[in-house]
Length: 329
Image 1 (cartoon, rainbow, N blue to C red):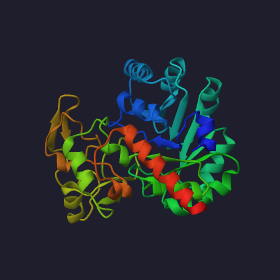
Image 2 (image 1 turned 90 degrees about the vertical axis):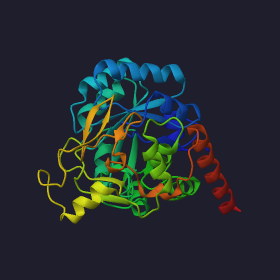
Image 3 (image 1 turned 90 degrees about the horizontal axis):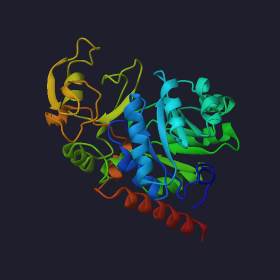
Image 4 (image 1 turned 120 degrees about the vertical axis):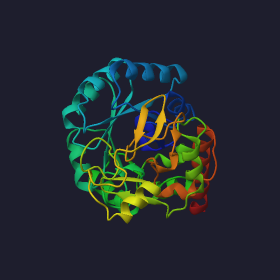
């Protein structure tokens, strides 16, 4: 299935694996890229040594294009320079205005993507020179940029940016979602939650099992509950005891939340984990795993089993192709 996004990114399948900080490493990103999609590393908090190590490890596992995601809420100049020095072919910007770094990324030979939540921001991104727009709907898991659902957002953004390729994000987890996104005018899809059920993902088994058991009603959108590291950062997670107890207490602000500061888990990789921490539950975590932040989008109801990432890519692509063929008859 060849689209404008495939041509621009030099990939075979219009599927981009969402960054999912804390859950994605070289193994998953490379597996998605090797399957014909675009794998993405989330390295926006990484120090220089570990950033370069992850990029080099990914390159050792795939000869195909992959991306690095940089969150503009934090200073990213040095990380961008390291990515360009390491030959990262695609840079994905997120959250704040990327214009200070877009020209440098393109001069360094990278294709540049930027995630937006509305048509106005999409136009601004086009004006600053990005190559591809990622339009993220409210259904998305993790950090949520806007307040508009995916279905109305995609055509609004497509109409606003003209010939610029658009990738649809939010609530997409199978071939039906890919087919719908293409029909709405997008040229590809951005998928996170479905890849949390991949064999290559680095999350705690209990987190994965809760994802598999979840329905479309089991996620919740929160203005600023979990401490993601910057203000005014809405996010979507699986509803759990931490969320329920906070709601029962009347949704108090930071500093007055029930159990605040309580250590509820530990992990060799990160040490003590306190309640309301935003860290993705890692495989080595021990403790009250259910109470940790478990990022997930509303497409979680379509996630039914753990599969190799390549199989997920193939299944979504083939499902969409079958639907589009049937509609064309």
